[in-house]
Image (cartoon, rainbow over all chains, first blue to last red; front, side, top):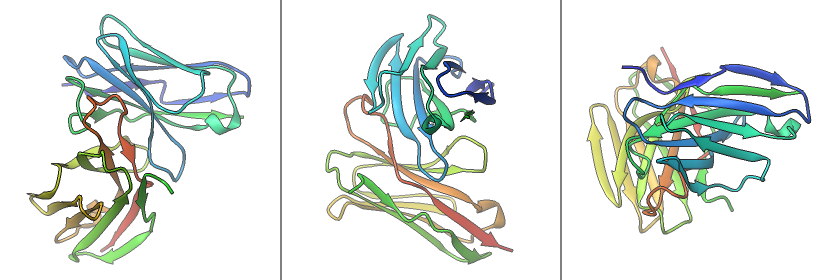
Amino acid sequence: DAGVTQSPTHLIKTRGQHVTLRCSPISGHKSVSWYQQVLGQGPQFIFQYYEKEERGRGNFPDRFSARQFPNYSSELNVNALLLGDSALYLCASSLVLGQGYGYTFGSGTRLTVV
Amino acid sequence: QKEVEQDPGPLSVPEGAIVSLNCTYSNSAFQYFMWYRQYSRKGPELLMYTYSSGNKEDGRFTAQVDKSSKYISLFIRDSQPSDSATYLCAMSGSGGGADGLTFGKGTHLIIQP
């Protein structure tokens, strides 16, 4: 059974550009969450989607947006990239809106902004 | 003050030792407490989960939560070199997950063969 898949695995972008990161949840999972993990820090919550609706948002600027598609896959978009956006972006899926114990994380997309 | 405090280490112990990892937190609304293990360049993997206060054991791992002290611990018995990784504590409230998980900084653990 495939786990949470994220693409691309690595990405290099220039300041000011836009980026789209993609996530496919485990089959049957209806909730997808996005996290940003800066080197040496724990993951920070960005968004949670359930049944294609945004159900939670962390303390990130409006440059960050996301959506969930009818097949429950998700995209994270970041506009006007800053050097500080360089991080590992993690997607987690769960069967339902849970309390964290049901989350399965993907291996992440490593974004470098130069 | 950060919501969740965790010593980043590194913590280096000999193989076979008992490892103690811990986190403190300030938000009394946290109800769910988790420990994740993260290997280099991989996503976090859930190790243990506890609801509210109490202990939970799974093989070589024991998780403890003391809500009165706002303190959680993870113990690893008979540590192995393969346990070398970063260990993240994570917490959430009971709001249906809308606030996501709040993670500690992670403790880098090294088990010396």
